[in-house]
Image 1 (spheres, rainbow, N blue to C red):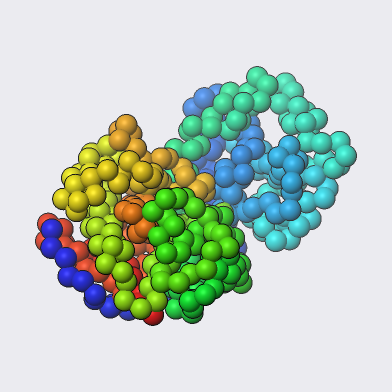
Image 2: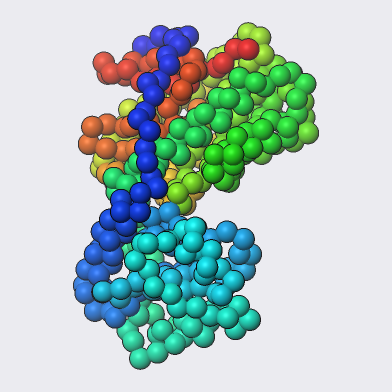
Amino acid sequence: MNTLEDTRVTAPSQPEINLTTPSDRRADIESKQAWVSKLMAEIGCDGLLVLQPENFAWLTAGGISRGCADPDAMPALYFTAEGRWLLSSNVDSQRLFDEEIDALGFQLKEWPWHWGREQLLADLCQGRNVACDMPLGACQVLGDRLHRQRRSFTEYEQACLRALGQIVSHALEATGRTLTAGETEREVAGQLSHRLMHRGAMPLVVTVAADGRSRVYRQGGFTAASIRQYAVLSVVARKYGLCVRASRAISIGQPEAQFRKEYDAVCKVSATYIASSWPDAVPRQILASAQRIYQIAGAEHEWALSPQGHLIGRAISETALTPRNEELLPNHSAVAWTTSVGAALSCDTFLISEDGPKPITAAENWPLKRIKIQGADFYRPDILVR
């Protein structure tokens, strides 16, 4: 493995993607309806109830519920071989049609908010052989089947993922470029969250770790501590019902020697993970290869101090990638590797494809470290020196 450091590369801009065309989104939903219909014929059921928010977002190509605090009052979906319905309380149905699923072929079954949805679900199941994505009465549970299917993204979902990745990269990098000494982790977390929400992305997990705090707390959130020398920013954000994850590191002045060494090591390990992210790769084998790089970098015990990555999509973690995981990486799924060494973190989201891993949260205008693995170049965001 060879590394060429301190290479500044401006990522080429992606063409503007229009994700608001109802016909494109509806075509994506129709393809999923066809898959559901085939599944119901296979198992011999009359209908499918969808209660999990992640599956709701998947089967509506990005619809989400906002403002509902009660899990038992969340909107749901009901599918038959020929049709699909939104199940919603009277409080939410108008907004959901106006803002989330208009012109997408859904009909409505509504319950008064003070009744609760339990009776409506019972009525749908009465006298029918109904499947559900979670345990419910006598329904056949299909949660695992839906979970496996939703991890592989359609072309429409891949476009949504790329658009969200650009938003996340921009927010991280704009926050990093304007960060100043003396600001608190909380203030910087607020700036990062504002940039995401300003462009319609919801921050789900925000971490700002100043001056080595992440050496002790690998998943440390943010505190009132002031940033003096350097900080590592990371975020998980959601838009279009999808999640992506990324990180960036900033140093005010030249990085201290220990942090520089840690960051060089974490880039080598993360590049190894990325280089191994192909369809049908085995997580156990990928992690075993990375452990050797940890050892070569003088950080052999670091891999055990924090999770190394997960498949990401409708849920923050669709599948955890561990040394015991031998399930093949699905084609057209997304992986977020979260490699850490000491205070350093290197994290980005990649689409797994037959042509190799495709960066979703690629750097826009950021210093990059080029790492050569078996003749191929892989780029990792380096430390931005302010």
